[in-house]
Length: 208
Image 1 (cartoon, rainbow, N blue to C red):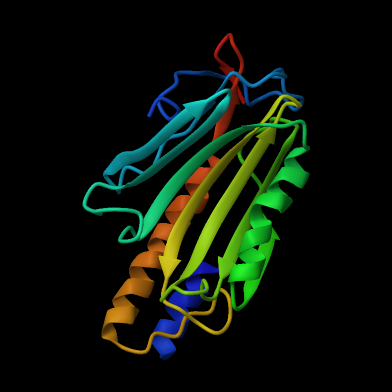
Image 2 (tube, rainbow, N blue to C red; image 1 turned 60 degrees about the horizontal axis):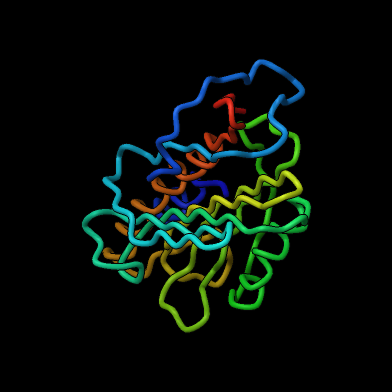
């Protein structure tokens, strides 16, 4: 997503996050094979709270939203982590995870982005949605999947945007939407950087 394009249009008109790791990113071929933990640092510009932490039989679903938000519906931004027991490749799992978005969005744009991790089996995508069906907003989301043949680990961050006809091209209709779009553009840049900072770690706490 070209975040500057949003501003140009305006001008014209938990336990997962805090795992300690020893970095090994200078290696071109990752030493980590099996994934023991996922580590990430949510943007400090936002104060976060965890609203979901489900764990059962190797399945994990955790979610974070800003502290001032009452729930997921009112949150402008959110972070989701999902671990699913599956032998799917990272690319195949990412494709299946994004598939429902294709059916719900009026217009959608999907493009890969380069992750910061050097772990071999990963897939990353930016997904721009003009407007989600039955909602008054569109989204900019960043998806990162890591697969070790035992499970798929998905980290997804999402920012709500004013609704539009074209994915990624926001033309505010009033001052409220203009302020919303400006804030969302800043958040989108933060969340893309956040996803690029995701690392996977083995049992020895060696992370890539």
